[in-house]
Length: 246
Image 1 (cartoon, rainbow, N blue to C red):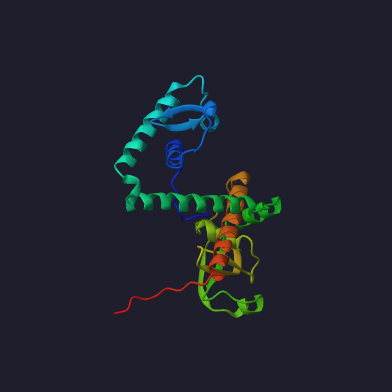
Image 2 (tube, rainbow, N blue to C red):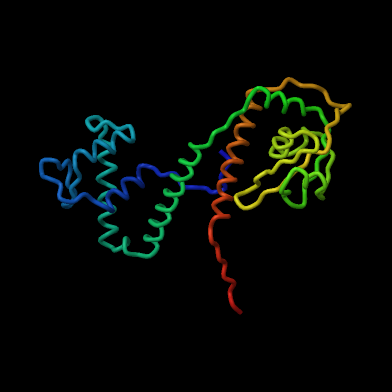
């Protein structure tokens, strides 16, 4: 989904095992130990759980244990050389933690989003195809519909199909004289007023993919909800940027 402009690292088996060995189990009873590597004990339950997470069967895949033992030996050697005490290592761990925290938050927020695209929405969008639209990008986001009617801005007249996708999706939800707000990023938004819609004499009708249009409209709703949420976070926050003193 395009609702984010943040690229997060994918957390794989190696990272999970690394963090596990950084914070080893303590006080594991002898009967529950599955393997011990230089007195570092790993329980049967932990091995079973980790192997299942990644599609391994403990009794069938020796490569899982080879990877586990090799990685543990490398981690122990790195600790012997005190790499774990270096600032660069601490920063890498901090970055991993923060990225994981942000990813979990965004995944949860995304799961809360509710989109509702009807057949009427799709028909309305299709109705704009082959039309010439005149719209105005307002200089400021109006506070009311009445204010939007007389608001100033940059006016454009163009074939609907030639517009950028976010602009098409916003305009297709409007009637002439109405305006809508598009959340461009988590910090910026802009308002468009639809002034008129006219047929294009040169337009040749084509078969449209209704499912593709539905997906576009749903994606746009998700993006707008997520960006609106990000903007609200910024608006409710206290942010102070200190300029460097000369």
